[in-house]
Image (tube, rainbow, N blue to C red):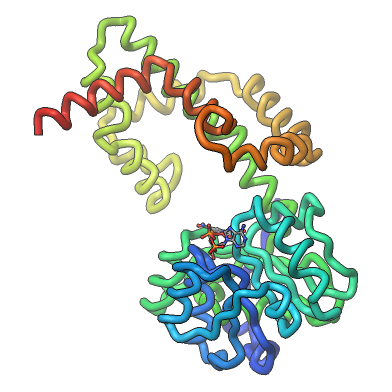
Length: 341
Ligand code: NDP
């Protein structure tokens, strides 16, 4: 059994970061929330710098009282701690091109997701510290839970310990953003990337495919589009089931259902031989995620994601996916509902 360490406020000492200049690259979803939490935890405002292009994100940071610079190189020059909080797909370009050349030898680089460190896409000097402080929440929740005096789930890890103090600094940062209040879980960029990409490429594609096929089977059996859309997701029943699973337990939430439902679900799930799906999942985890194949494939299409129309590979995938019976039926149902309002 693998039991992860969990760190609380008492395990973290803010004095490790109190006199450091802390730079936030990006003031978006995570950047805005984490910078404000850190300041509210007592890190002096004059020690915090936000680096952002001159636009509404920069305006927002200024309005919230932060000192803002537009030049990433200048920000990197002064950083003792550098939070890299811009989208994962732009991090290598921005970090390798504009930040790495100016970064102090012993600066601490903080990432909020494992992807770029695990796949070694950032050019980091061996003298730097690299830590992951990865909230499992969107930025608005990172902020609102902090304001309510509560913590939020977060992964923490030390990936490179140039200073010999990286772990202490990582925990101090977790405490400053409010993560150790409810417990920061020891993890690694490998674990975070494996779970994240596996969920995105293994688990959820299967769930999408199960709904798609179930819809077509029931439609063929004579069920109406309207009834199916509501029965399967538009009533929000699946969302409620997952909420109950988080509160009561993945299996035990079933006790909220009728006896017919409980019997059907439990006996049905036990009757499914998981060998095939387990092998499929292993294939995705080992031969696509952990061996870097997906990362290689994604890096080839990355630039095209900025294109308009069908030249953008994501738009092509949407067009193909929306051709299925489920999506076509949903469109008709939503159109009908909107026109009757
Ligand atoms: P956002 O999409 O909110 O980032 C927006 C910020 O990135 C803005 O400051 C934006 O400024 C800047 N940015 C965008 N493109 C560029 C560019 N090409 N060059 C320079 N700056 C750019 O990011 P998130 O906060 O969602 O994600 C940041 C990190 O946090 C990622 O590693 C992500 O995986 C991780 N994370 C995200 C979570 C989430 O809920 N979103 C949850 C946990 C972790 P501008 O456009 O002005 O340049």
